[in-house]
Length: 430
Image 1 (cartoon, rainbow, N blue to C red):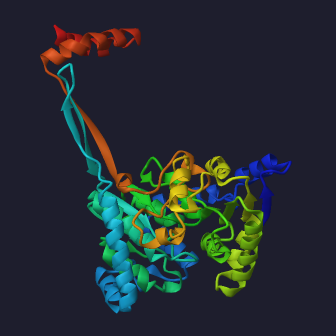
Image 2: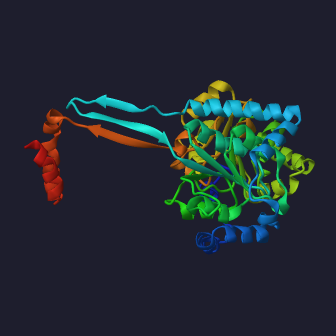
């Protein structure tokens, strides 16, 4: 864990190193992924079956390529009531939040009499990748599927590996709640390739979303342009801005909520109290051995964690903006949280006040937990309904409105050396 103090000499260089640290330093998999994609395009289902046997250790032809809707319904029915109710509550809140994101069509006339506007429509088909290894999260199923459903996508396809042939029943139950149309037991870069290009069994889609390992992320990067993607996501991140009124153990748990995802995750605390900084660091050290994910948290905290002391909490916000974190907690009084939030420019999602842990956003709050990482919050946003939609603009002129704006178009076409453009307008002006 790094401990930095903004008042000390050398802080600027130390913090710059923290900002520039690229935790996505997995081995370069681009060549391997390109080869997988090429083989899936050439061999289709045969390549998928071979990769599944190699990486997931089961035979698709023998065990079945798909998970049926009936199996998902049975998994849902078999859940203990408490878990079923929790998934339903999450789904209700996620669905409602994303329904409020639906964009409105526009249709109006401007001062020249031209009719202008735009119409939103859903893509025909979306593919959702759901990990099945270290991270098999039913919450991610809901966060990816429900925005697509709200957008009006007609066909939603889920790809999920089932290592050793084992299926996660809670993931299946979440797929039932979300209303997935197809579930294929295929994972890895090969699953992304199948979604993008299609095979004999699997029809291609228009958009691919969902988290995955380095191979899945690279596959999404390589197929972008053939299909749309949500983002290329990296390791999880949390930044907590907290004062000494907090319980150190509460803040320690917040930091570890992301550290337990992966050894490359990052957790950073900003505080204006040096004693509180030390107390949180001690609490982290105390809590880690008590939890089942201790090994992952310890590696993450030791390699990527940081505690930073600033003169005042307001001084933390420009530093947070440089980090552009996936998650930002402002664990302070409500009025202070609002004042700090007003100054935040770059963060995937912000959690305001002492009673709003980031973990609540992972499950039942409503906003999407698929968020930009690796400082990408500087230029991108979390997954939303519009990731599954596209906007088509339209224009309608009559003789009068064409006469009003057409001569300017003729002049510009001439300046650009495009006489056919000019003639196309000029002929109508005559």
